[in-house]
Image (cartoon, rainbow, N blue to C red; front, side, top):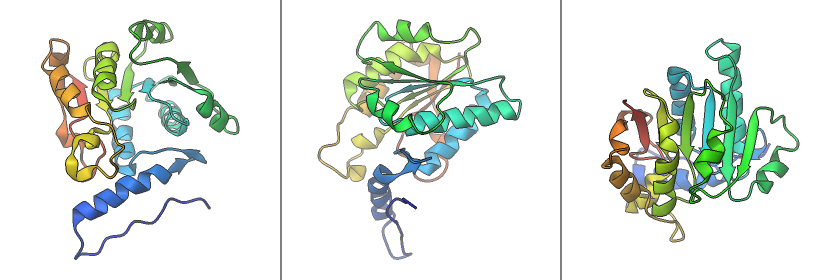
Length: 229
């Protein structure tokens, strides 16, 4: 069985040390044999939010190798089996979707649409909008390059696809928290872009939900947003 490295903590250890170890560990996580670099605590919150909002489309900005697209597809399929939604679909965007195509070759990937595109391309939101069903209730996740420019572009281009009451999650704001940076190669700029966008007219339609960082550790500080109107 291919498991990620073990992380442990004693009562005498620093919690910060434990969280930093978890941030390193997540790079070795997988789902159904496909790499998936997200905290289980964040995924659990996603399950709650998908159910609460009855989202039937997950729009993922940043595919990587496709593990999270597959995970989201399976969560939506479960919601459909329980009658919460009629059917679900995942749209996942990346500069290069070939790594995901290769990883998903051996697993069922029905209802996953891979879109090759650059979040900085101003034409991309219109391309993606044309793929949405008429009754789309979108749950949007920005897992792009975690820089100021890509975060701002994701918010400006795709937040409008979230219906009132729905959610947009800006992932990996941990890159801007000095205590949580475990590699100098990590980018920066997520949290400044998020703060500035929230102060804009479009951003004023959303509220931050820090209470959704409910499990004590999250890669997405300040990144859980709910559309209020």
